[in-house]
Length: 175
Image 1 (cartoon, rainbow, N blue to C red):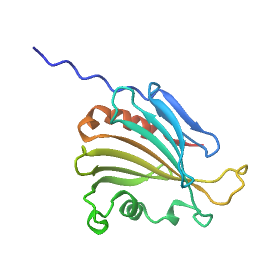
Image 2 (image 1 turned 45 degrees about the vertical axis):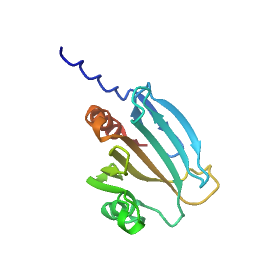
Image 3 (image 1 turned 90 degrees about the vertical axis):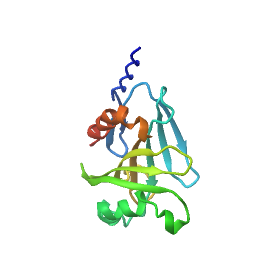
Protein backbone atom coordinates (compact mmCIF):
# COMPACT_ATOMS: atom_id res chain seq x y z
CA UNK A 1 0.00 0.00 0.00
CA UNK A 2 1.32 3.45 -0.93
CA UNK A 3 1.70 6.07 1.78
CA UNK A 4 -0.86 8.85 1.80
CA UNK A 5 0.37 12.04 0.13
CA UNK A 6 1.47 14.77 2.51
CA UNK A 7 -1.05 17.52 3.04
CA UNK A 8 -0.20 20.67 1.16
CA UNK A 9 0.87 23.59 3.32
CA UNK A 10 -1.82 26.28 3.53
CA UNK A 11 -1.38 29.40 1.45
CA UNK A 12 -0.63 32.77 3.01
CA UNK A 13 -3.99 34.24 2.03
CA UNK A 14 -4.95 36.55 4.92
CA UNK A 15 -3.32 39.89 5.73
CA UNK A 16 -2.00 41.14 9.05
CA UNK A 17 -1.80 44.92 8.68
CA UNK A 18 -0.52 47.19 11.42
CA UNK A 19 -1.53 50.69 10.40
CA UNK A 20 0.06 52.31 13.48
CA UNK A 21 3.55 50.95 12.78
CA UNK A 22 3.16 50.84 8.99
CA UNK A 23 3.79 47.24 7.96
CA UNK A 24 1.92 44.17 6.81
CA UNK A 25 2.40 40.55 5.82
CA UNK A 26 0.34 37.57 4.70
CA UNK A 27 -0.47 34.51 6.82
CA UNK A 28 -2.77 31.48 6.41
CA UNK A 29 -6.43 32.42 6.89
CA UNK A 30 -7.07 29.27 8.97
CA UNK A 31 -4.45 30.07 11.61
CA UNK A 32 -5.89 30.93 15.03
CA UNK A 33 -4.87 34.44 16.09
CA UNK A 34 -4.52 35.59 19.70
CA UNK A 35 -3.10 38.72 21.31
CA UNK A 36 -1.14 38.87 24.55
CA UNK A 37 0.45 41.64 26.57
CA UNK A 38 3.52 40.42 28.43
CA UNK A 39 4.59 41.69 31.85
CA UNK A 40 7.62 43.49 30.40
CA UNK A 41 5.47 45.83 28.21
CA UNK A 42 5.89 43.71 25.10
CA UNK A 43 2.90 42.89 22.93
CA UNK A 44 2.58 39.56 21.15
CA UNK A 45 0.31 38.50 18.28
CA UNK A 46 0.29 34.72 17.87
CA UNK A 47 -0.88 32.79 14.82
CA UNK A 48 -1.25 29.07 15.56
CA UNK A 49 -1.68 26.38 12.94
CA UNK A 50 -4.92 24.45 13.59
CA UNK A 51 -3.46 21.28 12.08
CA UNK A 52 0.13 21.35 13.32
CA UNK A 53 0.64 22.40 16.96
CA UNK A 54 4.38 22.83 16.37
CA UNK A 55 3.95 25.37 13.57
CA UNK A 56 3.22 29.01 14.34
CA UNK A 57 3.91 32.64 13.52
CA UNK A 58 4.19 35.51 15.94
CA UNK A 59 4.75 39.24 15.95
CA UNK A 60 6.49 40.65 19.01
CA UNK A 61 6.46 44.37 19.75
CA UNK A 62 9.21 45.66 22.05
CA UNK A 63 9.52 49.39 22.90
CA UNK A 64 13.07 50.71 22.61
CA UNK A 65 14.78 53.87 23.82
CA UNK A 66 14.47 56.97 21.72
CA UNK A 67 18.20 57.01 20.95
CA UNK A 68 17.73 53.84 18.86
CA UNK A 69 16.85 55.67 15.65
CA UNK A 70 17.73 52.94 13.13
CA UNK A 71 18.51 49.24 12.99
CA UNK A 72 22.17 50.23 12.88
CA UNK A 73 21.75 51.44 16.48
CA UNK A 74 21.56 47.75 17.46
CA UNK A 75 24.60 46.86 15.34
CA UNK A 76 25.11 45.14 12.01
CA UNK A 77 22.86 42.31 10.91
CA UNK A 78 25.58 39.82 11.83
CA UNK A 79 26.21 41.40 15.24
CA UNK A 80 22.50 41.42 16.12
CA UNK A 81 22.27 37.78 15.07
CA UNK A 82 25.20 36.90 17.29
CA UNK A 83 23.70 38.72 20.28
CA UNK A 84 20.03 37.75 19.95
CA UNK A 85 19.58 34.72 17.72
CA UNK A 86 22.55 32.66 18.78
CA UNK A 87 22.39 32.06 22.55
CA UNK A 88 25.67 31.36 24.20
CA UNK A 89 24.79 27.98 25.70
CA UNK A 90 28.21 27.33 27.14
CA UNK A 91 28.51 30.82 28.61
CA UNK A 92 24.98 30.79 30.04
CA UNK A 93 25.33 27.30 31.42
CA UNK A 94 22.56 25.85 29.25
CA UNK A 95 22.51 23.20 26.59
CA UNK A 96 20.55 25.34 24.12
CA UNK A 97 22.27 25.34 20.74
CA UNK A 98 21.51 27.55 17.75
CA UNK A 99 22.79 27.42 14.22
CA UNK A 100 22.57 30.40 11.86
CA UNK A 101 21.75 29.25 8.35
CA UNK A 102 21.50 32.66 6.72
CA UNK A 103 21.38 36.30 7.78
CA UNK A 104 21.01 39.43 5.71
CA UNK A 105 19.39 42.79 5.11
CA UNK A 106 15.86 42.55 3.73
CA UNK A 107 13.39 45.34 2.88
CA UNK A 108 14.88 47.71 5.47
CA UNK A 109 14.98 44.97 8.11
CA UNK A 110 17.28 42.12 9.14
CA UNK A 111 16.25 38.60 8.13
CA UNK A 112 17.45 35.46 9.90
CA UNK A 113 17.05 31.77 9.05
CA UNK A 114 18.22 29.51 11.90
CA UNK A 115 17.62 26.43 14.01
CA UNK A 116 17.42 26.05 17.78
CA UNK A 117 18.05 22.83 19.67
CA UNK A 118 16.86 22.43 23.26
CA UNK A 119 17.52 19.15 25.09
CA UNK A 120 14.57 16.72 25.06
CA UNK A 121 12.69 18.83 22.48
CA UNK A 122 12.59 18.57 18.69
CA UNK A 123 14.93 20.89 16.79
CA UNK A 124 13.02 24.00 15.68
CA UNK A 125 13.55 25.90 12.43
CA UNK A 126 12.83 29.64 12.54
CA UNK A 127 12.73 32.57 10.16
CA UNK A 128 12.72 36.03 11.79
CA UNK A 129 12.29 39.53 10.40
CA UNK A 130 13.85 42.05 12.80
CA UNK A 131 12.57 45.59 12.06
CA UNK A 132 12.60 48.95 13.78
CA UNK A 133 9.42 50.94 13.23
CA UNK A 134 8.91 54.59 14.22
CA UNK A 135 6.47 55.23 17.02
CA UNK A 136 3.22 56.77 15.72
CA UNK A 137 2.54 60.39 16.64
CA UNK A 138 -0.58 59.42 18.60
CA UNK A 139 1.51 57.32 21.02
CA UNK A 140 2.64 59.61 23.88
CA UNK A 141 5.92 57.89 24.82
CA UNK A 142 9.28 58.41 23.15
CA UNK A 143 11.24 55.87 21.19
CA UNK A 144 10.62 53.42 18.39
CA UNK A 145 9.18 49.93 18.34
CA UNK A 146 11.25 46.85 17.65
CA UNK A 147 9.00 44.51 15.66
CA UNK A 148 10.01 40.89 15.15
CA UNK A 149 7.99 38.60 12.91
CA UNK A 150 8.90 34.94 13.42
CA UNK A 151 7.76 31.79 11.61
CA UNK A 152 8.63 28.55 13.39
CA UNK A 153 8.18 24.80 12.95
CA UNK A 154 9.97 21.67 13.99
CA UNK A 155 12.87 20.83 11.70
CA UNK A 156 10.99 17.65 10.77
CA UNK A 157 7.94 19.66 9.61
CA UNK A 158 9.95 22.50 8.03
CA UNK A 159 10.11 20.98 4.55
CA UNK A 160 6.31 21.00 4.41
CA UNK A 161 5.95 24.64 5.49
CA UNK A 162 9.06 26.20 3.95
CA UNK A 163 7.03 27.47 0.98
CA UNK A 164 4.49 29.02 3.35
CA UNK A 165 7.26 30.66 5.38
CA UNK A 166 8.73 31.99 2.12
CA UNK A 167 5.32 33.52 1.27
CA UNK A 168 5.06 35.17 4.69
CA UNK A 169 8.56 36.65 4.45
CA UNK A 170 8.17 37.75 0.82
CA UNK A 171 4.82 39.41 1.58
CA UNK A 172 6.32 41.62 4.33
CA UNK A 173 5.97 45.24 3.23
CA UNK A 174 6.52 48.60 4.90
CA UNK A 175 4.06 51.40 4.24
